Amino acid sequence: MPTVDGLCAEMRAQGRRVTPQRRAIIRVLQGNEGEHRTAEQIFTRVRSMSPDMSPATVYNTLHELVEMGALLELDLGLGQRRYDISTPDHAHLVCLEWGRVEDIPCCDEALTLPPEYEHGFRVVDCRVVFRGYCPACAFPEEGQEGAS
Image (cartoon, rainbow, N blue to C red; front, side, top):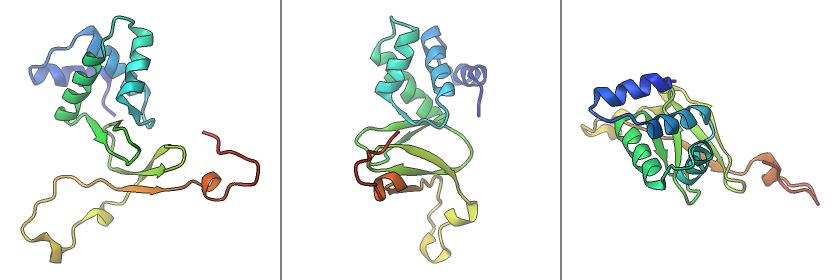
């Protein structure tokens, strides 16, 4: 996973400004590895550290990090986009009841387009999302609620 300093250096190399606010947002993203937070959740966490942070700064920084390829913006079918710091290829497992998202490793061979479907198409990205219900939600015991 890229470091805070590494991402800031990459932003500078692309002619983007690195402000204390952007550095704080990147720090929060680094601390959220595997948590797949929404922009609002990221904003809340950053604002607890920097009370003067504006939502626009958070949204704009997230957008720039996605443009750079340093952050994945995911639509996992949960109603709000989630953000995932770019890590080696992986798929996502989503519980439709709780909204919990988990990274799972995936095999490169499983993500290739079969030759009969290529038709000259050059694949540059593939995202795999498994949606369903975790064991606590799929087989709830009477009187128990799922825990997060």
